[in-house]
Image (cartoon, rainbow, N blue to C red; front, side, top):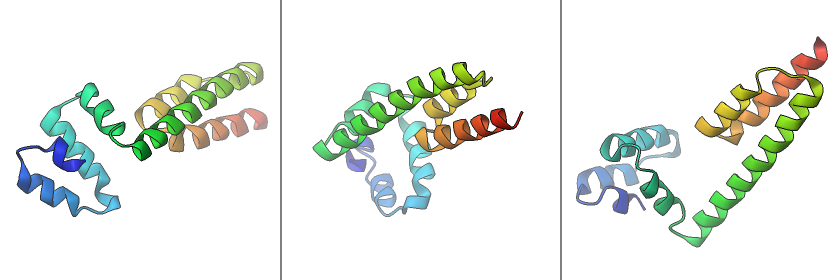
Length: 111
C-alpha cells in the first residue's frame, strides 16, 4: 500500500515500510505533505483490500452508531459541549471520542 501512495519515490517508500507503529504519525504527516488532503486517494487506499475494507466499514458503522447514541444521550441528560465529541471523532477517531463522552457524562452526573 505504501508503495502506491509514494509511487516514484522509492527512497521514501522503503524508509516508510521499515517504520514501526509508533511512527505512524510520521507516516501520516509524510503522506499529507506529499499528496495534500487527497480524499479520493485516502478512500482508494483504505478500501484497497478486503481486510482493510472490512476494518474501515466496521469503524465507520461503530462511529455512526456511537455518534447517534451519544447525541441522544447528551440531549436527554442535558450534557453540554457534545460538538467536542463529534469533532474528536472526526479528527482523531472513536478511540478519543468514546472516553471523552463518558468523561463528560460522568462530570454531568456529579453536578
